[in-house]
Length: 192
Image (tube, rainbow, N blue to C red; front, side, top):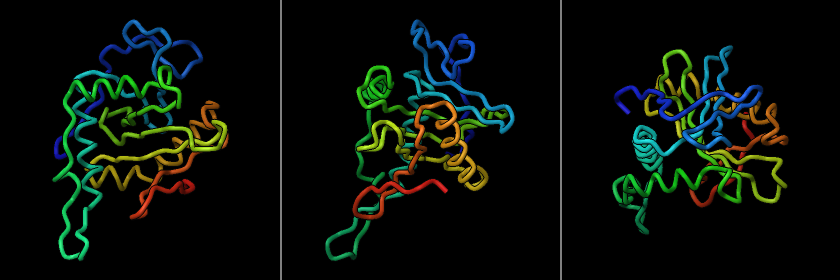
């Protein structure tokens, strides 16, 4: 993303005392929204607004550029973003609504992390329960901003910060693992 991406708070309402959730529009069950003033970080659930749809589209392109399709004879390759079909805005809004842990059975959610002071986008995380862990361990796919300065500055810090936040808030008491594609399959690696 060449331009800066900024946090939007459209439709996000009041804070519930002592909770890491905030009201969203008429939904009083709320969305994950946590400000860490000490580390200047904010994590919040992705919501089906136009700005978040645009942010998700951009990060999907970033993620797709990281993977390549290779011909059988290994002489030709093309990045996945060149052949991947794009979702329409309505399809993305539907997927965002489905990624709310209050409506899906897996507890899966998509959250974005921003710099609290500058409101600049850092990363999107797709979070779900790791298989066969009884809800104790989270599996996280990190997609960082295309801005290499942000990626270098926050990469490891965000990984540790998120794992500690989820442990402290009793979302994943056993910690989290990072989902990484090794070329053949996805595997869960400890966050270091």
